[in-house]
Length: 273
Image 1 (cartoon, rainbow, N blue to C red):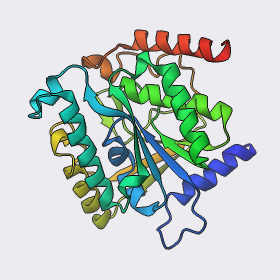
Image 2 (spheres, one colour; image 1 turned 90 degrees about the horizontal axis):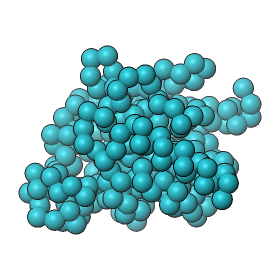
Image 3 (tube, rainbow, N blue to C red; image 1 turned 180 degrees about the vertical axis):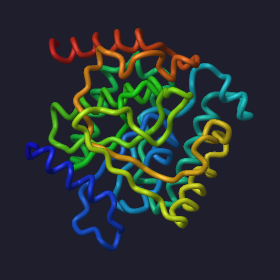
Image 4 (cartoon, rainbow, N blue to C red; image 1 turned 30 degrees about the horizontal axis):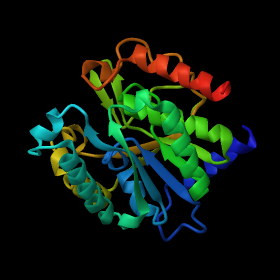
């Protein structure tokens, strides 16, 4: 284990401390693809990290108007604003003020086509806030935007010094969607936090704040655990697992082969500008 791994281990263990137990809490950025991803992956943690800054990369409103119309909105802008307000309400439960929430205003389901710009924006955010810890998505094929944010954070880590950690979200499994767990990786320790009854009720209240996402978030409404780990080094030119990716079951803007083509192109542009 090198010094960086040891530092990340200490930071991950700090995720389990209550507010009262924390001393000199490290500056922490949570970078999520969509409004509500932070709650799904780390809602209980948020209450224990009063100084956390939350960055949403997209506005949560796809170009396809289907989601907006299904939620009762005429335009995608109205839908995006509703999702913003829901996020403010949800994070207020955790004591996170609106001025600690930033949205980069990318379009939902379009990040795979803007990876270079996304990487530049994430690096700018990291340089602005100077975090000691960045918490984000794993590269697991759950959603193309999640994978794009994981890519951007990995690229930013090459240019800045911080501990990059991940929260478990969702991905394809043998029986459908698997939630709150990581794809297995050799030599990668995961940390499991089991919610007590108060924390479960607290997280459920956060989830209920996202009224427009009621059906989408149904699988996450009985939270029991949150899992975290140090981000491994990924090969973004290869699929995260064998077989069909979860997002390839849906019309979410791209497929795995196209995503990897965009990632390879962006890597080439970053490494050989």
